[in-house]
Image 1: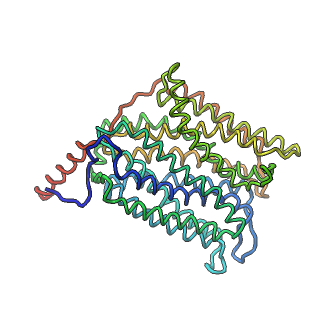
Image 2 (image 1 turned 90 degrees about the vertical axis):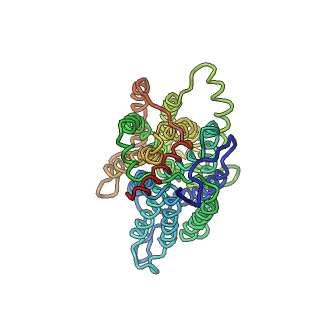
Image 3 (image 1 turned 180 degrees about the horizontal axis):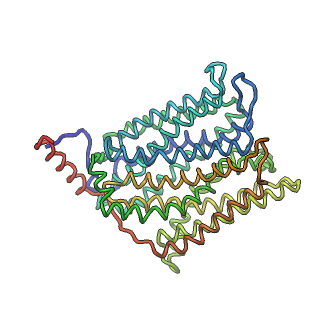
Length: 471
């Protein structure tokens, strides 16, 4: 009999798994660190960035957007590698712990980006190294954390998965709200080193919280080469081929959504940001999204979905389709705002607020739905892999934005597109994507898979057999 100090199967219960609070707590702290750092990137790059001599040397907006979305693309590219290594060799828990340490190192380097006289490096080089480490750490653990949530459930309590993924998403947005409000203030008051250092402390706390829950979790073992056998089996290939076209459509949603951290922040600098006598910082406007998410999750779950469900069958694919169409006006409003700015006006940020309302509603419909749907469509040995595959859609969306911003840069620092044309271009791309998606969704066919005790017993039996035969 093989022995392990951790449980290798979900607890046989109808109640909530005991490890969930540790996962949710970890996610809240980790998302605080990530979104706090990301919230100020656009402002830091365009207003605070120095050269190797300590002199101010900010980036032009197109260059800053290119950097930000290349970083976003990297963050969501590494999940597929983390997923493969976790399912193949080390298991999800080990990958999360090890890569969290890389993540912490990236934040530590980020805190040094404003100190070229200390590091002896050009701040752009330091920034590149820090963002690279954060991308590896943050990206590598993403599919493992999402799949680790689902792995805590067996047949008897699988009905609670939807609720937990909602709370999981709620914790993400709670951490994002707090950090997006706080970190821009720290940047304004104390400078980049403190503003980037605080998220690093929260990432260290996130790692500690996750480690404390190690005896509460179900640790689904890595499957070795059997992971590849299932991935490239007829069942695995069919699941992948079913999901890839869906992810291509979702990628365009992320191309627009993730510009809330770049284009929308830069646009807010030219807007009237006075609210009840308080001037909101451009980067703080991003807090609208996570606040609305926390309000919209119960609103959609208990009001909108039940009401709409009386008139139309709300399948996951239909929810995603509704979200794609909502993203179109969400980006058309900023295009109108840019028209006003180019005419010499200073529109109030209330107009961006309405854009956030629309794009957040779209996020509920697209992101939460696709996250849960991806888990259920993944065969049992490839949960992390499919989560990584889903996150490649985010990478692809950000890569598209980065390439567009690279292409429109002129050698003299000007842009081939006006800001109005820029917004209209992405609005048109989103509309075309949503229309084609309507056709695609009619032909999707898939199969639902849920993790259970049978899989873990099978894995342990196979491991014992290998041990007794000496292979």
